[in-house]
Length: 558
Image (cartoon, rainbow, N blue to C red; front, side, top):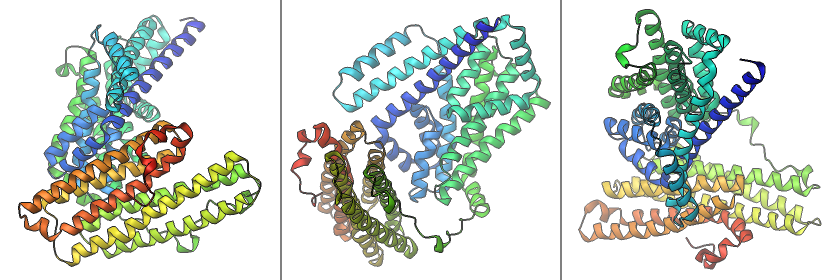
């Protein structure tokens, strides 16, 4: 190739790869926005049975087109102790299989699919009023763009075989499988998608550009890189979540490295995996992940116990360091900086409330004095942050602020008060109810406990959404949060009715725990209402709040 051709080649490849990465993300975000609640409930409920957990992980990864997204969701449940390490690991192993199946599906070529997906997706996204239909349109657009990007890669790589230099480099990678393995792992890590990486490598083989041995090594490396993504994204997670993620990393990454050694020294051909190079490489990816799941899922409890033995909880931070407040007094002379400091403190408050809410459900199932004391301590920290933020903003308002800065200061103060109110409900009401449940020696009915766990998870998801609103100030996310509050209200009413129905049937467990059950649902609804109010200032500015009945509610009602 001449120099300009080389530049254009890399430009086309880079553009096609970027479109592929973005399209995969487009599908994932569409599924998360439309079906996040159903996915979370499905994943948590399935963890009681390892085979079902693996199947759920497979299906969820196919929907999200990402085993990493499944890993992040499951790590939240393991941190809250609503899923055990073994059940979570089974889901992750199944998710790895789902990720491999996605690559198989996306390599199907049908000329009519692209225009059909783009046309239907665009029409649904632009015209549909219902949120799920709009997000379904987003998913279809993403799928269409994945096929477009793969066609772009095929077109861009077609002239590569005319370049002697390119052929020599790729032939070298076919001989140096360790380097190819490392490149595959690094590339999957950089693009944060093992699906996108595998699709790229397999497409290069399909074009006759890359040797099968090089592509097979890169695909195995992509498995290591894909597992590393979840590892890096959960560095600050709880020790149980880390044990699960590390176990999956060792199994998937170590298994890929072991298989690479076997293929390099003991297997001369991959013809048994398919008639073409493309089929051999993509089938190797599926067979590896499927085989790993079949071997490891039955031993998930043993692997979890080994992880618990080898990975001990980190020591507590040195108490003398204390908590460093984001409220910088020297910034009060610069309103913009001061408001930024207050926003950072508000985010810290929100993260603390989320942690409290995540932890409180575990003491309903099994009382733990340490966890209860930690929640009470976090509540004190939230109250202190609220008090300090309120005084900080009051000092700021003593100066001559412009109208926009003054309104922003008032909004931050109100949001801090709402987070403090949510914290109080968790620490005072919910901890008290959990203690009463356990001291009374009674337990919820199976259905009642599932309803409370499901409702808790819905509120937890909304709390995480509220943190997104604080950080991004995105009106669309704010609208989603307020709409979620209305759904929580409707679900709470339905659950109260179902509970009364069990009482009428004379179910002993429901009668014994009736008040605790109903008060817990109300407490969660109230906490959700306070958290959702964080969206109100943004929607007031856009005028969206005027069309909602939320504007007519007093702040103290759920």
